Length: 160
Image (cartoon, rainbow, N blue to C red; front, side):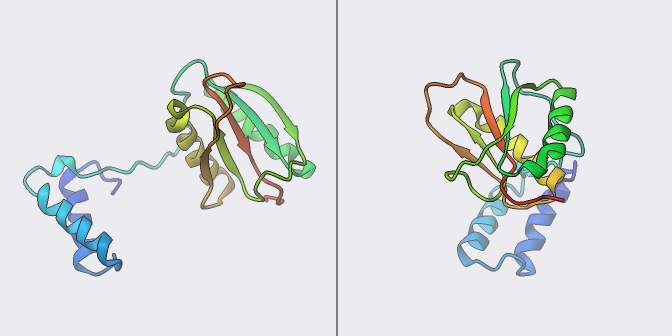
């Protein structure tokens, strides 16, 4: 699904359906219906990109706050801080926080709907950086923060 070739992406979708790699009936039917609808226009097939490098900020007003629930993660926070700064992110702070309302695992929090895309890109970066799956971008309402404010929480667990 990462191929530059639209025909290859369409063939991949068909392969997944016809070889029963997609076993959920509703998903199979949906993918089959979709591939049938685009068979004459394969350029409409989705392309999923993996990021070999950290993407730059989508806008210049992004503000990132880095948080950890474990003080042994300070060097990891420093590494994330340096990497994000190197591509243009504005890191406005970092700290260790014992917040019982936070999940055990990493997450990215955003506070304005228009920041969702940036949060999702940061999830992709963290997934690769931390080698952890299922990191989520979670929306919270809080009018006290500015647009572009995003929190990266690396969790309570020790990450190696």
